[in-house]
Image (cartoon, rainbow, N blue to C red):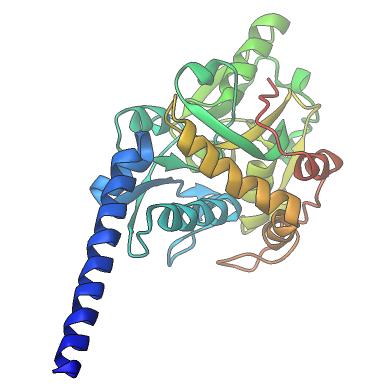
Length: 304
């Protein structure tokens, strides 16, 4: 009888513990708001990824990889812990420079950490995390073209990528300096670089690390030159929906820990100073003083 009573007591205790755990989970779900509530209720986090933003977010023949893709996946792991959903599904959704913001606003993606520039203008459309990369805007040209700086583009065909801050900078330069460039805005980065390779444009104006990526991964890298006095300096950040303080706190917490712990510098070296997939190319793009300062003092300042 004592054994039966003890077993009954243990069963009641176990049942009570399960009920308490369920109630705690239900209370947590009720307390959730914004993106985290949406992810919890859907059972899936939708991650916007780029297909050819080397070395930030790109498809290497097996899956999506890259410097900022690694940061995104670290954020996903924190979301799993925060929601206590270790089996949370992750759905990767390809985005382009043109459609990434509309897809975020239409709830087609929950988070994007690719190669999206944080600008003051975009703050009216989306929220941005602490920066994870700072860079200059320059151009890639054929080495044989003789082009070394932006005034050399006067009257010539030039390409950039639609929906980017670089497109705005290039068009402002064209108007302010009366260069009469014939500017084409390609759908995405590979299309823009293809225009230079096929001699439909003399220059592709874009973020410096992006054009270095195309140069490094081209079968004939010495045929191309990254050049030009920087049009400006900008910063990449993760992007999520506006007015979502819990999501901002979670995302920035991950980025800040990575940067101040040294993990971000180690990650940078993996993708910018060592061979990367799929062909083992090394971009040879050492960490800059401005990046070291960013890692020491994380911030979400737009640089435009």
